Length: 46
Length: 459
Image (cartoon, rainbow over all chains, first blue to last red):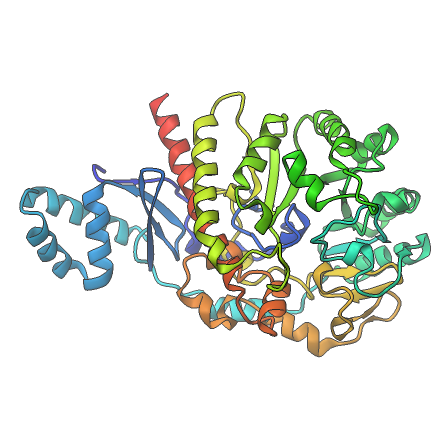
């Protein structure tokens, strides 16, 4: 495309079917302890 | 729903519900804004009016690119997740993570400590015994269902003040992993005062992550993190932290600081830590009652936004060089990030995650410890206040009206329940200052990804 550059191929709507296993890390156990950030975490099934 | 923003010279469009991120030229940026507001055909007419200098062919080309992305599910996608999230949050939950308050005591007297220098507003300084800790691990295993990975964070107060019990509990945990078919991920949060070679060696062998508390520049760190009689702590902890970070190959740790109203120029603290050689850095805004002189105030926000932009610009400059580093809140996993359930169902406090006090009481998370209204039960009897657990279970973005129109909801999961409670009196509230900072951080994180992809393309 000339005008639009798309960075990523993963689409959240595609995770509805196979997601939700719950094996991922709990948000607050990483480095924060005072906020809630999930966007920077990774999927265990990756 | 789309979210448009400009950051460090980039025009960025986030398609909120699909997570697709687009970098666009100036004219397309405006076109998309009009499209969002007035729809496809009116947007084209308005663009023609606004930009007689742009050829019709160019505008039609942009329109067809947008059409294609809509067809691909990458622009103007709908939020259709609510029914699934409601089902998901209503499911029977298991506990998979535990914050083990191994010590309610501390050798520092940090001025902003939410743990009340370790006492958690109980007026008592306590150490967890091995027996209580063992029962906590047994409780976790027994309540974790088929979940394989179990997380246990040794927290305080200062955990190294009860180090022997930490070691015994790790040993106990490992001894039951095979028979229970579980894998413990132990982590440790420490102020570093008591860190030594023996502890470092043990931590490197057993701890999946170590969080090292340091606020950045010596004068900032020492102002907020003195010893009990006021002596500075930076000079004692810094050499130990450097040694530990290197011994872990600059991975699987965070040096973590807190910034306050006293250092609104906190980007300098992050850069200080980076210049000291740390590669994994997390520096966060203090959460404090507005009456505290160090609390972040609404009027501090413009300066803090500038600081995040400044930090992002510096990180862009360092990308791909030896000076590169990770900043926890600017990290974003675009291809392997969490599924939509994880993103929308809340942080898990009170359901998948609990905190355990030195005497074995259970709380929804470490931030609630000491507020006995939130005591859920104990490690012997288990969770007794099921109605409270239910409240936490249904605390997700769809239960928070303000989240429904917010682009950040897929990245913050509705925010911290404890902050919401402390500032609004309800876990379903929104802590405004925290939300605004979170949104700014997400924009910077995305801009860094755009920059990274430009660098890769240029190579």
